Image (cartoon, rainbow, N blue to C red; front, side, top):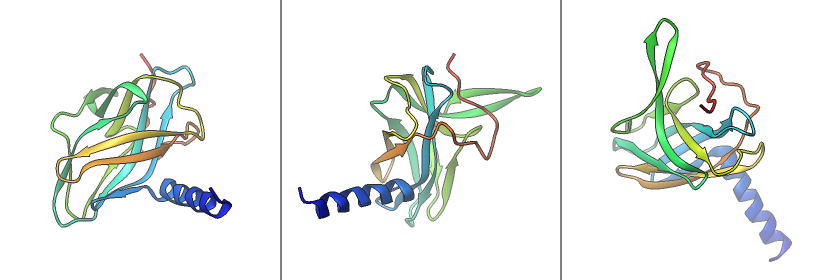
Amino acid sequence: MSFKTTFTAALAGTIMLATGAFADGIMAKDPYARAASPAAKAGAAFMMIENHTDTDDRLIGVRSDAAKRVELHTHIDKGEGVMQMTQIEGGIAIPAGGAHMMQRGGDHVMLMGLNGPLVQGETVEITLIFEKAGDVVIEIPVDNERKGTHGSMDHKSD
């Protein structure tokens, strides 16, 4: 492979990580994954999912070889300052022309039983499964140093 071909492929990969994945009008913008510590048994992924089509869609599942179980999760306020993390049943609606934020303290992709540590600067491949758009495979950079801008829940292993 020539230097020009290698450089072009590397540049395309960098642009994809910087701007997110795009398939069939669905875009995952500013994705990142993190774990509470290198020894954590669980991690999470966050992103803005945008629907650039004129048809409503629904994120109905997620999968990754990075963990034994991968689920869509959210937090429920149980009152008195207690938040409970739980699996989302029925998926997440992504309206036509709209977006849905997957963020710390809210909806997110939960990686349980990690097959290896989420190493700063590396990537993890996750497949988002949509009702209409189908599978959208994204490479998510691991950013364990990133501070959450919304919510205050850390994802620590139990």
